[in-house]
Image (cartoon, rainbow, N blue to C red; front, side, top):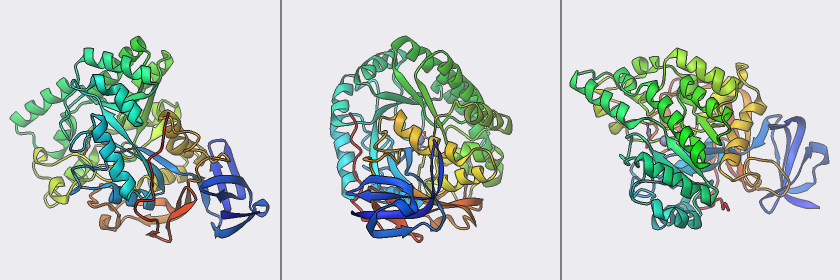
Length: 455
Ligand code: DOR
Ligand code: ZN
């Protein structure tokens, strides 16, 4: 038997363990064998992975791809080009585009644009507001992956539904079997302190962080867990930034609520000191926390398991919007968010190198769990025979520094990870059996990526 593709001579790592001198065989875009290099079938194309590590493709369920409507920041083509270069084989786009993804026609538009230009596979969330509770079943039928509510004001200014509307949304979403995720910051708390800080002339980048205190995040997590306990809805906490919020998630899990959670590379890597060192470049919502909260996020979230997933919150803005020319200028004139798709794998591999978690634990949180949480498993997030041949090949020992963020593939590349040094990098990315990134170049075709179909 001759198959389409064999990748050999790698250590294959899944959450279940690792197999040295192994590889994967692919036919028609699906995995047909995983095993020892010398037992794999003949193939049209054989890739020698040079002893590197092969894992199921990274699944990033939190990116702002910006299309439709905000293509001056990023679009499906550029976001998924960055994903391919970053080792990410599936991305899920956030709904704060223009128009917002709040009805079937807008979701279809987003899918059409993705089908036309994506390099890797993709999906999308729909937003729930006061205006569209009755559209939840129709969004489900259009194929949406899951739903999002913005509890506090953030980029896009999507207004939060009332508590009553959130309860009703949970009931309706429970009927669809899908999950509802939150931007979990209590809007009344952050609006109050934002106004107070602005009136007092507290205009430094660190003041932006302190205007959105941990209690706003912790309270929002606890309230949504209480609502989910009542309604039986499946819920998710996007971008958990603090140990206190991770403890709240752990409390919800203990209560038997189906609450899952994600954190991002920047909350694990930086402390709020980065606001004093890099200024508004690092401005993001929720903000990067102090050392004590970060330590607790590591302990409760990572060591004790409250955090299920890693994702980037990849949020490109122009250098003008980020105020890079004057990074310590008035923070209220700057915007929140920065790119992350090409630094997430290196950040996580650096933590592996530091012994903070194992390769197996990395793969679980960065591929398998996200696919499970959002209903894409085992098609995505696994190396099971018969599933999509998505994989990421990494060199865990490669030391490098991101000298210049302009080397990245996004349309706008501002990131506080510029200047940081990593141990580990993406070597190649394979989506459904096609090599989309290798030797430092995106080699896949725009438009190859396709929507991941979910029940
Ligand atoms: O910093 C952020 N940027 N937080 C968000 O909630 C949204 C995101 C964006 O869309 O830029
Ligand atoms: Zn986000």
